[in-house]
Image 1 (tube, one colour):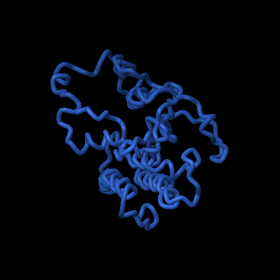
Image 2: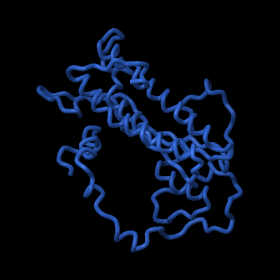
Image 3: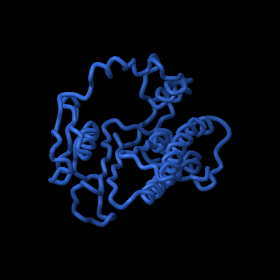
Image 4: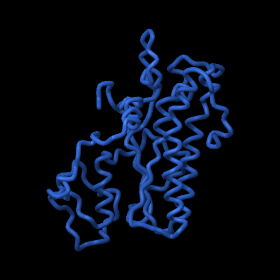
Length: 257
């Protein structure tokens, strides 16, 4: 609860259940950040480091009604708004602080990508009589909401300098698809992307002079048969808790295994 300013969480009923089902995401985010910070503080730098912070998605699904109450007919004095209105903003403040701490442990010539594969907006829950399932209390979703791709540092073309208070998401250019992220990262590192990949490098994002001019731009595939033979069904070995998390967030249907 330190992230939320000493927030005193609810202990009874549906609000308590919703809050409790966020805890795995908070623990996971803190674990990922702590592991990376520990390695960086010890001087362990890999060529590529990635950290996944999924808590923004989890709180967005569960507490969007408190963040944007008007579509739900909630007033500022409603219990939902009074209890949870600060959850989403506070978590984004924490994530922003995490990025600052991590960048402080890197040299100035580091290249940084901040990527989200989707945005978030309100979803009016479809409650039926007697329905107390997790899916019935999700008030945030991302059907058709665009994600974000922010790049800065070595190898990245400079964009027009504009004050932050002049930036508006509706005026942001459409760079491409989330599928273009991996080919772009490979090109930045001088590694050819696979022509069988669904995405392509975002050339407008990168400086014109390649860092590795002798490397081919692409190859037919990176998937040799030896690697393909090691791949199992994606959910075959998934634990029951993880499958239930995905189902609760609406990514799996009730009959998916």
